[in-house]
Length: 165
Image (cartoon, rainbow, N blue to C red; front, side):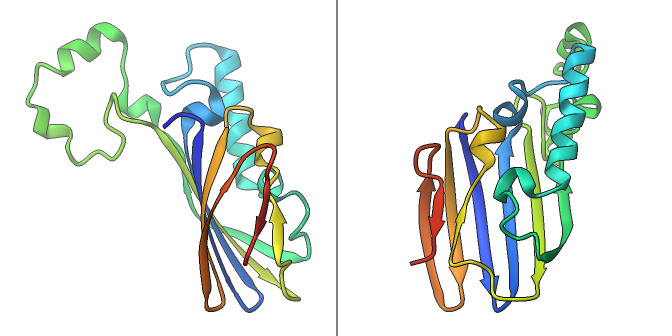
């Protein structure tokens, strides 16, 4: 669904794992290959932002060492072609594309996993700043596990604080 993204948060002791999944349209405004230099630049800016976590959590985990073990961005160029060529492609057997995760016509998703190794216990709640950076994000569906507790939350621009209780 457009406007909806997913966030999975796991906190164990001083380690925080955050997985962010979103359709490209929420971050870019489109779900296809860039059709102009401006769109290509926007795509590169989104990639750059996603490689850092400030757009998502601000500086709330600035005392932690961050890594991104998983970073998946849509590969528009390898799956989409000019319109005339695309029609020809669909004349072939449909099953030859089943192994492709982002088949033409499907949603193109960004998926990033951040790991934070913190020197002290992370905060008991987070203000999610993603709404400020990406206006296409209307709601974030959050699943979280903190210690032995778990829960589900829905965040919106007017309710962007994730509490673990």
